[in-house]
Length: 473
Image 1 (cartoon, helix red, strand yellow):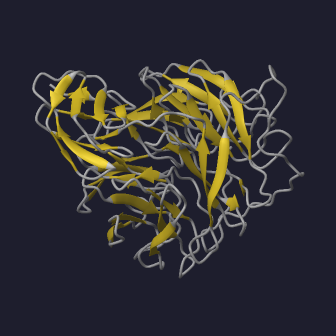
Image 2 (spheres, rainbow, N blue to C red):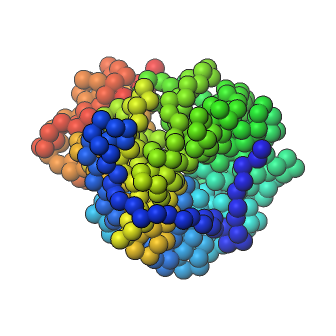
Image 3 (cartoon, rainbow, N blue to C red):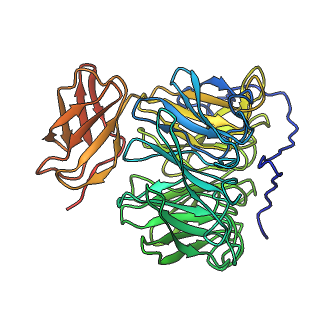
């Protein structure tokens, strides 16, 4: 059974939903499944109007070196073909680029922050051949079209890019010719593309999500359909293009994985399926690098329905994500928290009422302030989507770009209110550093450094990295 995806000529996905009047957030009685812990505060920061974009889709927002948040909308803008935007943590939005079709159309996925400080992404359609593009944009909005797909090398890329340790970008396309099953590709920052793999249906079909590079150097991903039972697969692929199928879904253990995998601090990979599971409403799963899969949670509509995107592991070690529908008492999507062992708590139910967002196809991003940011594809005051902020009281921290490197290499450290910096240490070993601004600094991996947490001591206290920095021999 193939995944059913409906697109009109303008690239928009139309959803017809009927919703009852809801309350938000959803707060069951203490002790019941879905009770809020910790308290969640959700604020709508931006409501899209069409001229500034509309329908932000299957994306995770990304934090830039300037501390602002960057993303895309599927449609809207001056030509109706989608936008790239910047929004401050307090909610001031700037449209950086409006697509016009010839330079791309319908950017489904979000952006990735490159090591050079620029952002890279894909459009599902448009470009010189109409089959989608790869692009680069600076934080100031200077746009460069890097590559135009032509079907024979892939087409209709729906997932975000991932930058590998070799500084190249890796991604997927959902279609290709002469086969129609999709591809995996590598592209340099200058736009030189290499097709690494053509899917054959037996090893997967329709890769809608992007890739993640594991600590073993290989890339991991999913296809929405195909495989032994035609319900999708989890795979890994080397940088040279050797692909291995790790798991074939069979509906009872999930169906149609569309979100990007993440590698957690315990080394396993975590993801979601849009459908399947015990109740047929989607699930959260864990899979090891060798292919052992464990279903952690099956949604049942009351706690969410159809999680479209992946998860984020926050600084409290828990996972956070969204569902496109469901939620008590029956609504327009949820935000949830899940422990590594699979205990799920519903944090918020979207209503679409009074400017609230609805139908979050995208996942969450944890900002270095500690808060989460995300988008809804509908809702907001204009009913064309929104950007929201979720606060649960987590403390500020720092992010590393990249999160691995050799002694002597440079690392960009992103943060919030980085003032009065007195020291930077890599697992306790002092490093030299240069302050860039209040939102980033650059440090050099010191001699004697070992794999571990990076700490930055500022006038406001000590900030720790959300992941361990891996020192490469």
